[in-house]
Image 1 (cartoon, one colour):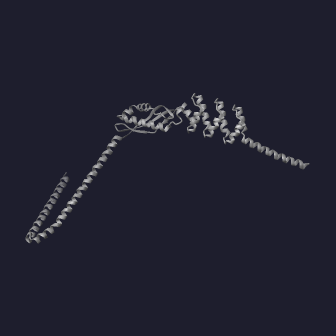
Image 2 (cartoon, one colour; image 1 turned 180 degrees about the vertical axis):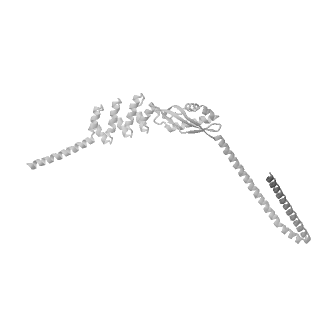
Image 3 (spheres, rainbow, N blue to C red; image 1 turned 90 degrees about the vertical axis):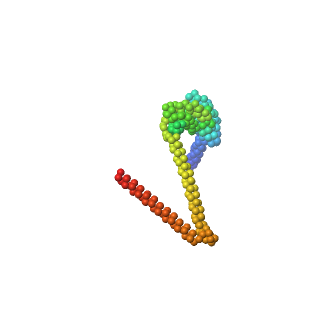
Amino acid sequence: MDTFLTGNFINFIIIAILLLGIISLVLRFIPIGLWVTAYFSGVRVGLFTLVGMRLRRVSPHEIIRPQIKATKAGLDLSIDELEAHYLAGGNINDIIDALIASERANIALSFEKAAAIDLAGRSVFEAVQVSVNPKVIETPNIAAVAKNGIEIIAKAKVTVRANIDRLVGGAGEDTIIARVGEGIVTTVGSAHKHSKVLENPDMISQTVLNKGLDAGTAFEILSIDIADVDVGRNIGAKLQTDQAEADKNIAQAKAEEQRAMAIAREQEMRAKVTEAEAEVPLAIAEAFRSGNLGIMDYYNMKNVQADSDMRKSISREMNDDDSNNRNENKNRNNYKN
């Protein structure tokens, strides 16, 4: 009898463990707790729908909890729409928050448009926030040169509001900054004097705003304010200095070229003279052979040549002495002074 009772007790324990395992497996696969929460939150969803989400590898919590939030906010959204957007890689929570915020702010935003914005890689909730509360984009320092050659360095603050209709395919903040920088450069470049820009910085804002720089972007420009204007370098003077330096280098190069050509011509003439002097002995020898030049004539020619060399030597020495005397007199005068 005791053995029979002991065997029944063991069988009961085994059956209880098996039942607990099966119940745990069912509860893990079928989120009954989530179903109860959805039911009492007004969201009608079947258990088989939740099982289907598990089979499709969709987290039921990622669908049902945003659906509960949307239902409490009065939004009429189907679970199939949310699940399809989730499978496409979208952010369900961000879309629901954006739809709730847009409804409270009286901004027309449908689920399809919000889903398209989200799948395009933009934060639809942030876009709604910027549409309600415009933000300020600050440009870096932008350098421009007026017609008188003075550089102006300006920094602008651009107040923008998100344009919901142009969020898909519209350009971002980088395009706004680039266009504003282009407008600043154009405005300053068309000014005859930099002082005009310093006296009236608002002319930059007005010119940039009139260009319609927000066309094709995801934003609407509300205002452009010049935060800072500084005077930079004198670009015109620097350009003139660089041009003068370039002209000087060109002139020096041409002068060096002419000097090299003159040296080459001088060397060429010396070569010709040396060549002609080398022919003199040959001519003298030929004159001796032909009888046109006698020995006395040759000695007389050598005497004349020696006399000429002596006169040149004396003249050179006298010039050197005169030069030394002048230098001595100049040094005495400097010493006396």
